[in-house]
Image 1 (cartoon, helix red, strand yellow):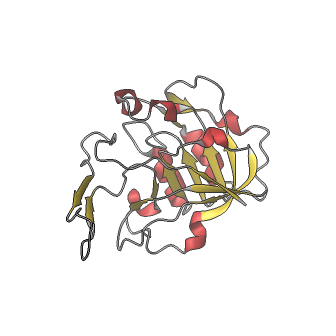
Image 2 (tube, one colour):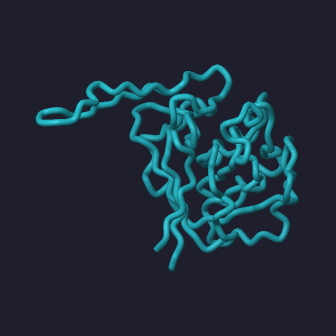
Length: 211
């Protein structure tokens, strides 16, 4: 089995959704020797970096990340590549035309937007799911959908989130390294922290490939 890391590294000055708190790392003791140790502290939002949204994010009364069984965050997946130089704006439902979703539990969108990670451009605008595309995905019986951009939706609105949440789907955002994956033939693993009563969590997303 081979693992492909699909997560961005968390660093103190990493890009964040506009207005979100920057992550903080404090080393309590960094001297090494007899009796010494290193101890760190982090302070960050639950939507930092590569993360998963539970339905609770926009659906009041829905389950949070700690309410969902672990198998909801793992399963057979495929990658859809809408094409080179995808522009900001809604991805049409036609990107699913001819795609066999039988046996698939996660659909990941490799738009190429991860190339802007770490730059101001990343959070200015991006490719996102049109309501028509979200409806088709929600109707396919998937566990979740993922994308290499800041959100399933544009900067304003949350229609795609609403559609997916109504079907109990999870959303993975800010995915990395999707270009290293085959179109299909792998499993996705993206386990959240067990945060009580929380709508989202950072994840260490990975693809598990045979061979």
